[in-house]
Image 1 (cartoon, rainbow, N blue to C red):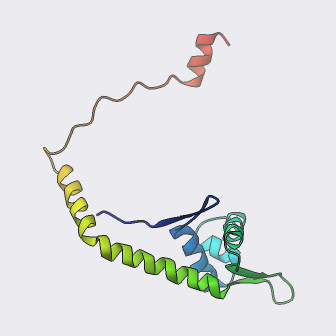
Image 2 (spheres, rainbow, N blue to C red):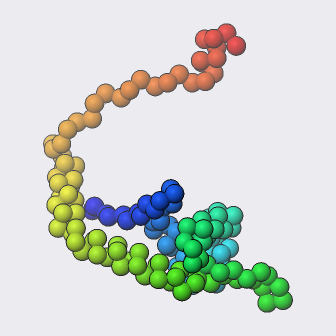
Image 3 (tube, helix red, strand yellow):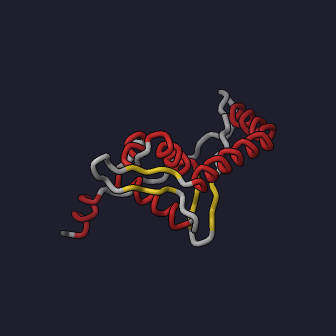
Length: 141
């Protein structure tokens, strides 16, 4: 099955894709950057850096945080953060619907190529690079 993956590239080398959107969705669900990161199998630092990059990429901000205290800290999406998720998911749906026929055709062509007796056979493997130890030994180290 061919899968369409949407990634947006903004000026100043900022990219927005499924990973950052999923992180925002997890923050919305959990109210916490650390819990969102854990849910995605990433460290708090990595999650925080991604949130920081999102907040810096958009002047209106995407996530607001509150410092810990008696009731603990937390994080929540700004209104724009929610809009960003909604727009991205809508673009994914539109792209998928618009390209469904083309994706199905490519998927069928790929399935045919993997059928026994079809498609090009792989060429010979390139030679393996010598191990570091063998290379050092050859140099006399």
